[in-house]
Image (cartoon, rainbow, N blue to C red; front, top):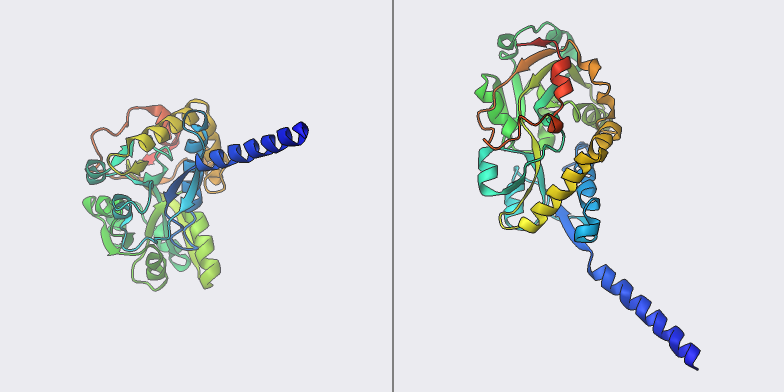
Length: 301
């Protein structure tokens, strides 16, 4: 009888312990994928997951969940402010850092500001003839209106057609409403492949010309959510320190094709200004940027 009682007690305590552990798991909400073309979303998941796993011992278990809200008209920061999501993963700007709480660690080491072009395959030769920014400025770029990139392109004298949704940009290129879509070199290959497969189209990712401007991608949280901000910063600093962040970037399916960085030698580079870059951007910390990329790239304009 005592044995049965002790066994029952142990089972009860185990169940109770499991319930307590389950109750301690914290949900962290982010946006779902914008569309099947949106290949960058899997990188966002990997970055959040990396930061959360690095803080298990200090903050306990957290798990990523996806909100039912979908991104419309670029209001990612509004969703953060209204508490539909806990983390926004996006490029920075003065407005965003004034209104929200940034974790100032460039999640992609500056890749977001290194842009090649999604174009129509039939226009390949036209783009190979471009040798200066004036020639590029005669063509029409497409960009999502709410992204900081849109303002950067216009600030630097490039013609721009703004649109409200991500997927419409690909349709506009396909239907000749604009000529090119500047897209991060880590994003374009996978997105063109996904779009062409779905739409039986002939877009290509043209990467002989690059636009380069400082635009770090950060974790943003709602102002006042300092606990989550500190957790994410702690996790990312640990991942940077122990090399697991760099290892992830070199091995992730979205970025592994960028290596070795020497393959980007001798690309035609148009350096663009970003006057909206916040003053606290850690631009002088080489540990946080692809300094090798800038050293290895020869031609700049």
